[in-house]
Image (cartoon, rainbow, N blue to C red; front, top):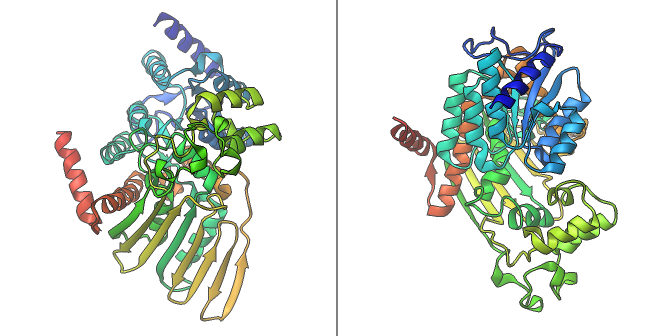
Length: 480
């Protein structure tokens, strides 16, 4: 603990040379300690918890706009990933931690010794089941929070995060990146303008992608509901969020859902694969579209070292470490021999409080990867889009116009950059409204996802209002 104290004091001596960060003792919270730093109010400092794919995606903004935000602390257990990230963002070694608990302890020590937090905000990009514990812990210390989706993996934890954020009175951003892309923003503007009349129906399809689903939801971190959550939550909660956002202020009142794990199970294993449990030893590997050798090793051998290969090793992928991962790790397993149990296809139907309706489909078996197909039907027109362009058919004017939203780069059609930019804006101004949502609305869209899954499991239509009331009552009783 003495070395930790010395480190935090050393941090304080260095931090006084940084520009002043946005959330100080004059913030709305009032009672929380301020962040380290002095100077002007134009820089948001961020502590990153989890430096994997999503942590990297959001913090590209810090590299692109160093005058607006800076990564000043990280927590990441993988040595090579940790070093790469720390070097990339020039993070001082006294603020490089192996676990979020170590970062949290250092923050507590700094708060108690110098009255300052390590940063303005934390970016939570750890595995889904850790979101609630991390978010509540750092909200209690007075940090603004940007949390990757989903909010949490069970209803009770989602409610706990909402309560913690409200108690802290801090900015809260959710990784529902789709609503922040230029594409979605332009559609939202048309909806809000009323130029096409009233929005009556939405049809959205999420084509996950055949090898993306195999990577993430059969072999990967989101394959098991026990280890993470059901696939509608882990993959599609931001689709449901966007649908709810477009219908706002109407709210979901009824939901039904059907779905199953239709293909990725042992009964579908090709006879030619025999007893093989790994692709590297499978006689049918060359004919299998889900071959791990094709998805990872062949791609790396051709110089493609980005996702998904980069997600299965610590450090930069190469022939040796990818081969080792396929021989020993879950990413080399046959998709028909893996321990997966989440749905590979699911449909959701929602009725809203104004009588409007929506239908959503998630399916694994597509060539397209996450390029949603969307149709919005209005009383006087329609919008048909594919996440890149959209066509507006105006019935009154009898016109048809194709829109080409400007791409800002980054993932999700610019949504990743759009979210982190909005989050930084919200922290700088201390205005939650700049994110276009708050913890209560985020909780409500998650409740709709949980209700849809309850419908799928129970085979009944779920009353969303009653579902929410019962969930909150259970939480209250458990936290008296």
